Image (cartoon, rainbow, N blue to C red):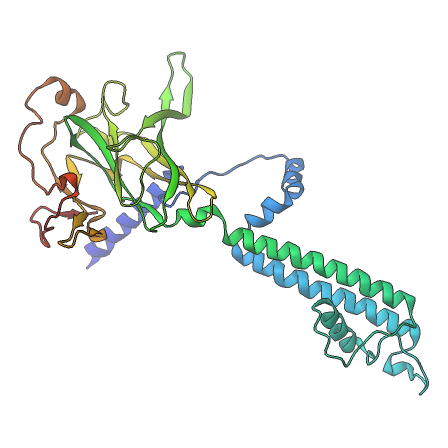
Length: 374
């Protein structure tokens, strides 16, 4: 029992360390902290107040929504109370029977607040109404109506903008948990699976990657976040993808690839982060969005390939089995990229697994003896 808990604690600590060491988390958030920012630079966020409010968390937006309306009602309620007090309308002032109030039925702080709320929300119950006897009251109702309209427009715009943020569309596009390295059409490739959970397409999609690592230059300079371009493609290219079903991204590991010098026994010892980006335009909203995720060496499996997930029924309808989306099977793969390209025959062994070439109808076994789920 103690060994079980100790193992779970070690796994939790390892996952926490990996999470902290990422620049980009698996769900696409950037894990970076800014320090020693000049105090005067904080006013830039106030100048760009619209973006600041849109990027607030929902809890703060709802708090600001409630506070904006409640405070405006209360402040204007105090002003209506002040007008009623100056005119002698309050109950404790004992107005005479023939007294003409500025606002009917406003004789205390509570009734002043209720009249302010009814005015700004245009409820108009009919019990409280302004009279034309006080010019100050007429001016105040005009000012409150204008300010109330501005608050309504601003808060509605903030909420609609947050609801329609492009990153919400990105939540329905998912990457595989793991990347794999295996032969593909005569080349050694790093593969990542990508799926669009909605039936609406992403128009003009482009896929690319960045390899982040620490590089020591010849002159002694150390670049903490050196970025290397990683080209990805699918079977039909890398631009203008027909993203109607899950696709597999391929990066060819050749002499120009940063993965060329790595091998199956050295990959896990490397320190880098592979960040993958998908840029596109949502078909339904015409808004541009970016989906991103990252892979560290512990999440790249050498000598494995993804299980097929696309099949075709007897009726000719294509089906996607998402239960196999992140499942992999071992395949015969060269020990390193150099071996693959220079030692012929090292990658020509038969391999296990199921291939679905041409998206033909297949039977996916329910229990594969070498299936591994990550």
